[in-house]
Image 1 (cartoon, rainbow, N blue to C red):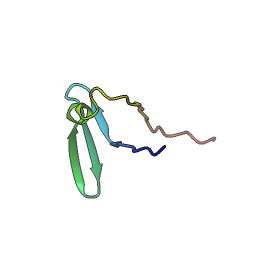
Image 2 (tube, rainbow, N blue to C red):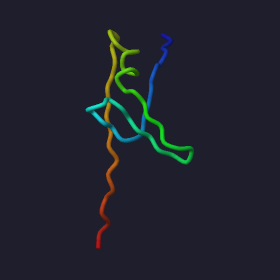
Image 3 (spheres, helix red, strand yellow):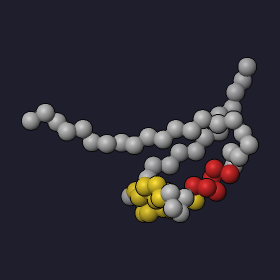
Image 4 (tube, one colour):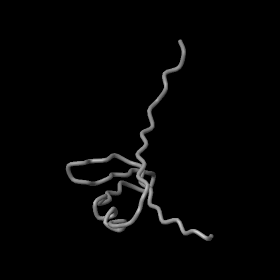
Length: 60
């Protein structure tokens, strides 16, 4: 059966107090209202995933 995939992806600093994500790239700094974006999915079956990239220390 055919399937449609709706998704949104942010990569930046999460501020839970303001529910904002701040992204910075070569074009500037952009602030997104995370709660507003989540409202699109309200009442729908979703998968939520959070990922953090951390540096790995090399062997000395």
